[in-house]
Length: 316
Image (cartoon, rainbow, N blue to C red; front, side, top):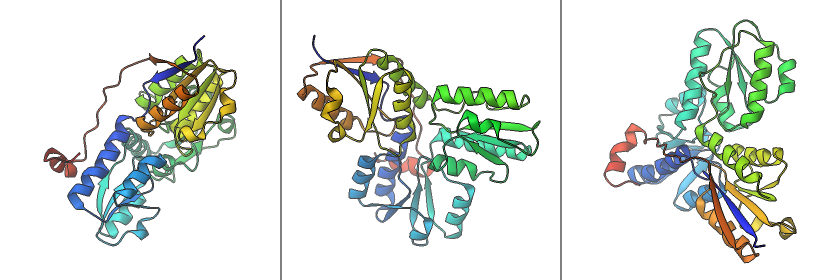
C-alpha cells in the first residue's frame, strides 16, 4: 500500500492576511523607508522576516516610532487608546486590521453605547483580544471556557451581550455560548458568530482529512491562534496532530507506522511552507498526493482608501 499525503483545502492565507501583507508592500512603495509596523503584521515568522529583510521595522510600542513617521497597525486590530496615541504623536497611520475584526469592534461599540455588559469569548494575551477589550474596557468581561461561565458575575445579568474572537474553535465556542445562554437567558449576540469564514472553512477541512489520516500536520507559527485551533480540532477527532513552523520541525518518529498524513496550514502560513512539507514527506516515502476540498473561497478585501491609488498605479 502506497503512503499518502491528504492535503486540506482551503488552507493557508485568508483574505485578511493577503490584504495585510499587500498593505505593507504598497506602503513601502508609497512612503518608502523607514516603515514601522506595530506588532507582527500577521502571526507567521517567515512572513515577518521576509518583510524585515525589505526594510520594515517591527515594533512593540508606538513610543519606538519617531514622531510624524508612518506606522501600520497589524491585522489583529488595536484599541482606541492606541489610535489616540498615534494621533497625539502625529503618526501617519495605515490600518491593516482585518475587516472581520473591525466588525467585532463595531459590535462592541454598539453594545457599549446601549449600556450592555459585554462578554468576550477569547484567549487572554492574544493581540486581537487586547484590541477588542480596549473598545469598552469598563464594560467587557473575558472568558475562554465553559468553566469560567459558571463563576462569571456581571453588573446587570438581564442586560448582557456576547462577542467572540475570530480565530476560535467552532465546537468549543458553541459550547461556551450555550452555557452563556443558560446562565443569562436574555443575553444577545451578533446575528452570526464572529468566528471568521476562513477559520470555519479550515476547521471543516481538518475535520474532513482527520477522519482519513493517521497523523495531521498543521503548518503555522506557535503564536497563531487559528493554527493552534486546527491542531485541537484534529485531536478532538481522535487523530494525532502537531503544529510545525516548517518541515524542519517534523520528527521522523512521528511518521513511524503512518500510512496517511493529513496536511493543512493556518490562515497566516504561506503556501511555500506547505510545499516544503510535501517535498519532505515525498522524500520519506509518501508518494501519493490527494487533495480534499470542503469549499471554494473567493473572499477579497480591498486596500484602505489611502493606498488604493498607489496600488492602481502599479503597487502590489
